[in-house]
Length: 307
Image 1: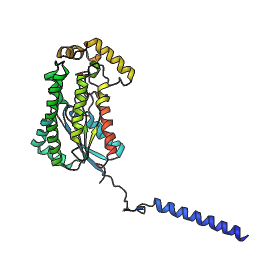
Image 2 (image 1 turned 135 degrees about the horizontal axis):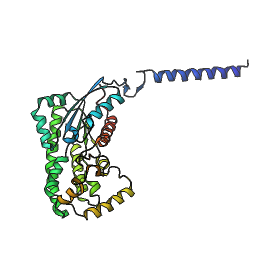
Image 3 (image 1 turned 180 degrees about the horizontal axis):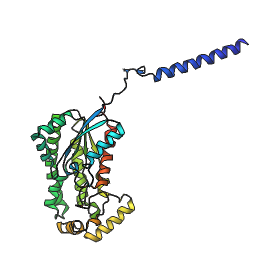
Image 4 (image 1 turned 90 degrees about the vertical axis):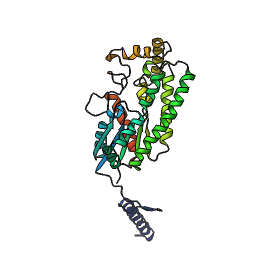
């Protein structure tokens, strides 16, 4: 064998050996390092404790299954997807405003104990605060007057929400908080009117802005998805607005609300994601949507799962 050919064989053999050694070094657990040092494998919890705080959407009103709205579904989804045991505590109560949710937490040692122990906290808040304002002003058709009332209410809500979140953080400074936005439950009946949609958007802006003052708080945005329901395309939206214009003549009042929604039969609910019983709360499909949105955020910010 010529010396030149022998040298080529030796060279190729050494190259292959170096490639194998490099691969073994890269894939060996704990051997991979960077300029900052060794990165140990992430260890996951075997049990995760989740607390759900809030109003009727946390309680699960409108859900005809035995899943307690999004909380039971979220428990099942985390267990199946992340292969961990999930202990879920649901402290939702129908009708509660932000200050009432806080008061129940302050008055309940059991809630405080579970919040302290939680690895993740999921919350619904704000819907009843806004509803209280809109109920008082539903007949105001002058946008300037309605805006004045809403601006005052938004400032009050911001103060109450900040107090609520501060109280939650008092009991648990570190667990990530996944906070739902609110939606417009009457949108499909009044798609041509901007008053309620604008109010909901502004309310969600207040929630998002306030939440930025708190570490590890992540918004779960369901506003548009729950408001428009199955009417997602531009064509469907345009048709819905034309139908709404014909039905309500561009006016929103307690009477038109009653005639368009509450007086309709249960089978006439236009939004596929809302309960036909009250035309307000999510049905099973709506809670499926809420669950998927929360789980997506929890997977994107997964510190709750790590030891």
